[in-house]
Image (cartoon, rainbow, N blue to C red; front, side, top):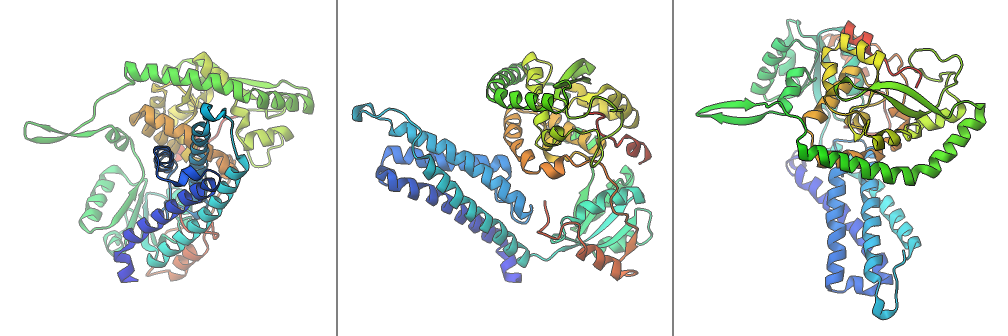
Length: 492
């Protein structure tokens, strides 16, 4: 295993290359059987094959690709399947166009859809096998890293430990301690990885430097100084190395391009989704005869107020301003499905067309929530520096019950790393939200309670944490004020 570990990167690269070659081969062997010219050296065949390769690599970059060791097998299957489906469809469309030949009295038509379905099915089988096999190989080579969790309170401990437990084949928790513990450095020395969560900045800085000196892997949560550093770059002032962090807003060109993209996508979106919205409107009306749309005042760029449109998913009578819970009796039967697959958000395309929202940006919050969150987290107002969006990094990477602080950090990560290409990637990645509908819309609920311990005092607890994972099916993935602010939107 020691020898294999030395060649780990090579093994992973060979697995990725083999998978891609198989996906490529399935497509071109099956379609080449119907179009013999596709397998002969020619300019047309070269262009078609190049299209598949370039699109495949680009889509894998967008969706995360074959991230064995870093993601569970199911997310890998989701990302690789979406990447491959889009690549297949566009390459097949190009193939149909290139088959059009006026000299042979042929006109364009979308040919052999049944072959495309066969190709996708075979590719899906290959992807499933390689996802599970790749992770099996990776974790056969790499045993779980021994890690310690260092926090400032039991509340913080209960926030981070459940997340680590989902990575059971990557991390084995051996110690959970307060940052004030006298044995702090001894515990760090015997671990491979250190998690620092809600540790005061001065102490965190010292511990990060210590871990760096001892070659320990480090994870720590974002604070505002970390967000500011996201837009920083190295700069040499005469002979002084400095971090250059300039205040920046969208440039004029970026603003024009973003609005143009919003107009195009919202116009196409209204046309394409109009049949779906019509069916939803009829279903909502038929269930209880109430209003189809739900309108609510929200805040967008600069604190400007507008009315957001959504399909009504709750009963009109008896809905009070309280957070949504599991099996909430206010949610209608139709509303359950609309919320599960995020279809209730579709009318916001109208807000985008009107210029009140953007396709990508921080989600617009209720006015009451903005005031409440800003009191608990003064930095919350920073997310109002850009126009609110239908989708965004926090919606894709987070869950329905992700804390306001974590959503805020994700929104600021998007703002400080803005680019048109990033918007395009996030639009494509929005498709993954529908594949994880069950956990992305789950309501707030109480989790497990954990307590501090060290492995030299309580080996049984460490073994429990390692074996009794919250998710046994697969490999690992990839204070008071905040607690008070940890609520979701009311009514809708």
